[in-house]
Image (tube, rainbow, N blue to C red; front, top):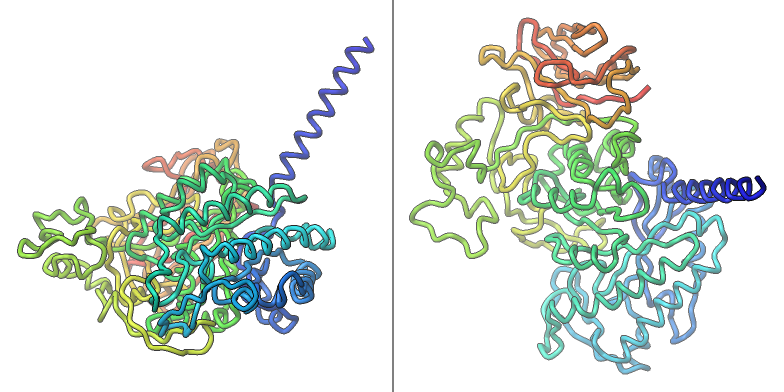
Length: 592
């Protein structure tokens, strides 16, 4: 009997340990969402960013170690402790490259690599493959890890990640601009080998800390480092650069499919989180045409693709002309497991992917590449690579609903600034996603099909609703994309399906809040329908009052059954009743 009791006690103890371990692998509510970004934080800045959940700091090596071997931790400590005292989570980068201390050149003899950099005006960088540089850099990394151990427990418990910045910043390459002396050129292959050593060291050291410090790495916008990182640093975090800069960008679907390998419902703990920075897009002329709508779609796009943290500067908030897009991101950020999610959303959207030959057959709309054109070596990357006749044929079908190709969709002169606040240099670029005019251009290549959603999907969007573009006033976040009924074409009802795993028992009655954003124009009437134990039920009917504004309606359902009992195996529907075709921008569901 004693042995039985002893064995039972051991089992119970093991269960407690495992339970604690499982809980420790879950983040508390409020970790992911909108974070601040930049070198410093203060009470006035917090007042301008009341919704932020953390701060991503940038420190310069030259400030941390102004003299060789003599570290000054005062600024580092002041900033991270201030964040913790104000209940903010903490991430940081330590910039090297052009932010390296002068003593590495004057005392250690690291060669200066001079560059022609007309964008950032950086005069030189260190030669990263110098033995002296490698020694100094690795001493810096080791010293930071040791110093973190000395921080107050409150600060350590709020410190989530350290983003590796191996070169000019956290970007992919070692230098900015062009080299004056080509002998210091570093091939991408050799640079990758250098970074592998840095990443492996930081990853292992981060795991040794208590609590663990996650190492965040730039996997590159084309994902060229992702496979190696997942194999060799399986729980590291990632930068997803393109997401916070724009929406509906070329190759958006490739980006989504790459991140989908990592953003899984069972991957809800510490492993593989994503962050991105939204800072330069606010300078774009196209963004300024409708800041509310553009910011909202950046947030919706980022959530749909899998971003956990979006970093903003205070100028981004002013540019957005309102907090709602950021609050929307906070509502859903970091929620990967539908069973644990607080809600679900579907941002209604139609996009015209000129490479989608299923929707736009080449026999009807024309070949993707004109017969007289030579196919680009790397395939179709930009709209300028596409047969213009095909573009115009697609556009003709949707122009009456507001679709357009934009004046210059992929090439825009812009004011570029290194600190993203004051304009500095005029530059042209046709690759960066934030240079693609996404407010005026509805066409693209490799776009994520139809709506932006999380756990709530529309049945056959293009077969049951009509795409609309730039609907309503610009002082509201809705309407950049939208969908409407088209009762003359038989599109009288839009159906929505909740993720099968959102509720453990889909046959039980659940209390939820269903939110609909609709454009109040004309005299259209529509209703919300849902399933109960008795079958399809009409809950709410509305007739538009022609105010010309977007209206957000919250409808509480006390007895919703999500067992896919409506038509087409769905759970909810918006149904046309009479009059004009009502336009919708967003549907949401919240647990109650």
